[in-house]
Length: 454
Ligand code: FUB
Image 1 (cartoon, protein in one colour):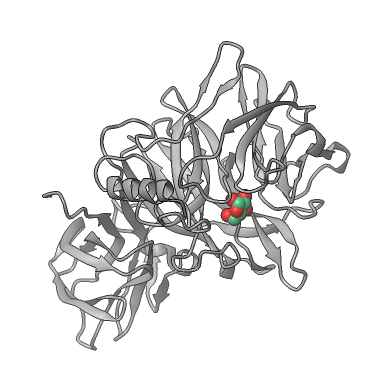
Image 2: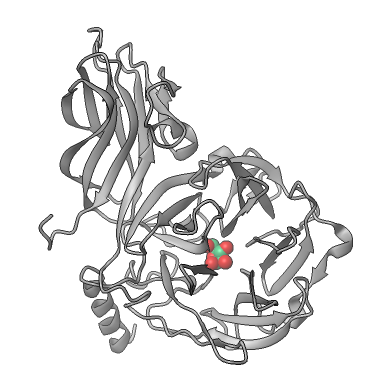
C-alpha cells in the first residue's frame, strides 16, 4: 500500500471517532445499502444492508441482512438481523445485495442467494408486516436467471419493475402483481445501453426521468466506480451519462448503493472500506448528498468524512426485539410471545419464564470489540422476578427485576461486546416460582464512545 494511502486511512480511522458522518454505521460491517422512506412515516429513513463478517474479508461467507432507521441522520437504530440464509430453505450461500419495497400494505425484501445444489444466483422475496422485519422468505422470483443484485422500483402508477445484474450484464422486467414472477414479454437486456456495467442496478425517478445508477468497471478494471444512465421509460432505452462516484481513497473493490429523498434532500448511499482500514471485502455504509445540475445531470460525488454534514458523529443503538427469536438470530425457549400488557414495541413481548432455563436470546452483531450501554425494557406486573442475564457465556448479572405493571427500562451500564456474533440471554435459573411474570419487550445496546461523558 502506498504511503499516501496508509496516511489517509490512519486519518480516516482516527477521525471516525470524533465528528465524522462517514462511515454512517461504525459498529458493524455492512454493504450494498438500500435507503427508503416508507409512506407511513415521512420523517423516518430506513436503510437495508447486507452484512460482512469481521475477520473473513470475502464475499463468499455473507449470510444475512440488517435494517437501520433514523429520524435525524445522527442517531440510528440497528434493528438487527432481518433475514438469514438459515431462514431460506432453497438457498445455500452468498447472501449478497438486496433491496426493499413497500407494496400493497406489506414490506418486501428482495435479495439474492445461491440456490442449494445448483449454486446459481436466484432472486428471493421475503415479506414482513413491519419495516424492521424480521422477513419471511416466500421463495424466488420465477423467470429470473442469474438473479444477482436485485432492485425493485415501483412506478407512480403502481407497476413493479425488477432490475438485476452480474458479471458485466444488466437486465430488467416488469413483475406480476404478486412479485413472484416476471412478465416474460417485458424482459429487456440493458447491458449495451449501460457502458461498463458490472452489477448492482438501482432505479429512481426525478422530474419524469428514470435514472439507473450502477457499479461498473472500466477497461482498467477494479475497483468499481458508480455510473448512471437516464431514460424516459423504466425499461429504457437508457442514455449513458457517465461516472458520478469515481475512485476514492479507502474504497472497497466494489461499490454499490441507492438514492433516496429524505426531508427534501436527495442522498446517495454507497459503501467503502474505511471502517476496516482498507480491507476491500469488509465494508461500511457511506452517505453523501446528491445534487443535479440544471440539465438534470448528477453532479459527481466526492466521498467525504463529513458526509451528510451534521457536525456530529453518528451513534447507533442496537434495538433487538425479544419476540423476533430465531428469525433474528436469537432463540426463544419454552416461553411465549404475548400482547396483553399494553405499551410494548414491535409485535409483542416474551413471557412465561416458568421453568429453569426458559429463556430469550437476542443476537448482537458488531464489527470490533467495543463498548455499549446495555438496557432492557421489561414489565413484571405481579411482583419482582429473579433472572440470570448472560452476555455470551459470561454471567453478567443475577438480577431481580422490580415489580412494574407497565413497561419500563433498566439501564445496566456499560458492557463490552466482542467482534462478531454476541448472544445476550435472559433466563430463569431455578425452580423457585417467579411471582412477577416477567415480560421482556426489547434489549438495547447503545454505542458508547469512551472520549465522552454520558
Ligand atoms: O456484497 C456482495 C456483492 O459485492 C454485491 O452483491 C455486489 O454488488 C458487490 O457489492
